[in-house]
Image (cartoon, rainbow, N blue to C red; front, side, top):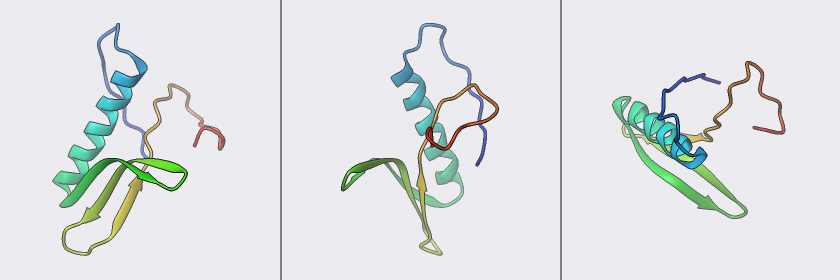
Length: 77
């Protein structure tokens, strides 16, 4: 798990914060030579970012969670 901290406008909505975090993650993966797709729907669930390495063809499934706590419980993940 990677912890990323971002600054947002004081009045930013939860959705705005989530969209910013997902965009940042997609940008980082793109810089690491991954092709990214956001908000991918699978049967019964949605993945925030799906990334495929352009050379190795490895896939990465990313679920972004905005949380201020040091410890994240399993039910949040």
